[in-house]
Image (tube, rainbow, N blue to C red; front, side, top):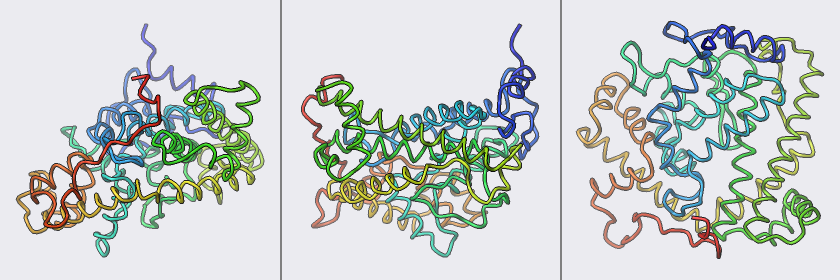
Length: 406
């Protein structure tokens, strides 16, 4: 006999912590639907995210390096998959709802613009006075409105708890919006886990990509970043001298393991101290219960400052990203002046929400590659004196031996 939804819900009640968000207790969907037969509500949400067009487009969106610059460098999609894996592990350790955590993690970057955070800043500037642009709110717009897959409603019609997790998602890049419409002080513990898993992932794996590209060096990291020096020494004492690729992998593995362990132990202590007995009591807390320890937070700030100074603002990264942002700005202005150049769906939506927001949605949904091709098609490539400014990015020269495992 197949395992039906009711059996899965019973398992949740028997195995999850009392403060976990149970799928049977969901606040539901904006548009009523018959419940799934062999999945929980959050498993259905996860599947809808994975099967969305916005999810597939993440494969060709920038994480740090412009898409197409290296075979081993992360894209927004590989980043998202890594976030989901780490989030599930933390959620399992804390006896939370893994399916809800995973659904939020997989959807958290759906609204990212092309060209990474530089693209997000550019769209926010272009939309000043029109509500701005922020990728968390754009993720919500995608799952509530922009995806067009179902005959009876726009969007993916996800549960309230997943949409809450998207709105409440916050990293050091983001800025909160008091108009988000979700009244609780905090989100579910599952959403808090997805939020911190995102930070663990992008700091650790941005280090990996920085080393892969040759823009960062282990010697510099060991002298300037305490977390790296500790992890490096741990690997050396346990394994001795290792080949470069293997050594870097194990150091970063050690970093992630240390981050996850710190979060699990700190969250467990804070949850116990708070005395919360339900998911709704979690939402009434004055601050998040899933956190780093004070020492780990201090060490992470040092790591963040190092990455900004040596990777994110490195001319090899910053230059192509800034040129791409100029491309995005010119496309935005071109579409405003030539409405016929946007898709039919965007044109119809413009009648209801205005042309600036419709153009913003259109651009935000583009991949890096498509935006570059659109620029070449519509604006004829670089102008006089700017030959090569908007060409496809050069491929990163990887460290010696990095191609061996292709």
